[in-house]
Image (cartoon, rainbow, N blue to C red; front, side, top):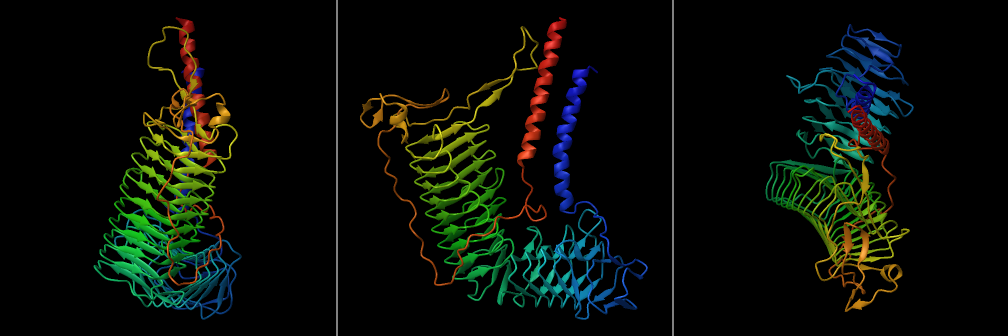
Length: 587
């Protein structure tokens, strides 16, 4: 193997290892691999107690006789850990009670506070257990932890009952096939978060901030009672959720899984993890709600949710995007119209890998990211009649093709009015007003791309290095009229008019030219009016930025990952070029 070829192999190996290593870190945080036992007090597999004299054993019952400030690790099945009212307290990190691959354990009468994980269940084996687990968490007070109780991976068949779970970031997380009875959840960032594929047994004896949980499975043509504190609909249809105030819940203040033809109208949905969450749900209407100050997304669609209507809502001050879909091609044909979407810490509307969305007549303002973004192959979407102002940038298209963006007011955003990058192409963009977007130079940016030579062909002459060329072509007029650019007269002071059209095309790059720039603004009609709100108290305070804890967030590409990939790819390209050049020199 030549030195150059060896270098190429090493670069490829390092780049793959870098990406794989990043993913392994993420998967490990989600406990796909056995977790190292934490240090602390142990109840061993033989039944002995090691590390403290404050736990007294009587047969299979282990009772605290005083407060403990260390982790308790349980390595034995079929026992009872009785707190007897004493406190297990941490310093903000580590785990209170740690159980790995345990069955038949009961944890009761214990006060657990100030840990990262109050009680943590993990499992060694990959896959659903042959028999359900039968662990129980009963009559405990669990407060001020990041996670009150967490069931990782394939924990199932457990019971959580009679607990007071308060002031945690997440009350009970990642539960599946768990029985919940008579639990009180108060002031948690999220009461119960679930695995989307598994059904829990939760009845109205459980409350969130004093209000009962309505967890319906297979219900049809009903209205959720007005005292609801959290609403989960699984495999339902024809459900009405109206006039509720929902705070402090899990994945969504209202969560729909495989639920169709339902209506969520005139609710106040605040301070949940997500405001409204839809998974594989069709033909639902989300209308006239206040959705604000949720930790992550205002309205989030996942999986094959389609033909839903999101209209007339006020969606503001959420920790990530106002409205977001992450589908990679499966979520189609949703309509977002006549909403007020403002002050979210991410994008106003973010469409990731989806097609056929209609984004019409919204006021999208003051969001930290883009007003509207299309990413990861989003195509055939329509953006029409929106007012997009004061955002981090107006419209972003990244690896997005054949979208239609017409009759929008894109004004005074902090960055570009519109930015296109990656493998974007054939987007139709005309009859928009681009006004005073705050950038140096053009109000539009189209990132260039590298044009690489075909290394598979035998060289006939000295090989050329990659060329940096203009971004792919898009369409900036309808054959008669293009867009209004507020800086047109500044760029082309000698341009003449042909009616309402300038006679000098607006040049972006050689592949992107507005041939018929407009000299006066387009009349934009139909943007959102302020939606009516129910007479309920809301808290409109801006939430803190969400943390990057990988156990609670989907893994995302970070700038460092991009730099690694770009560097590796560039190095591979240069190495290939050198190989060809050496071959040429030796022939």
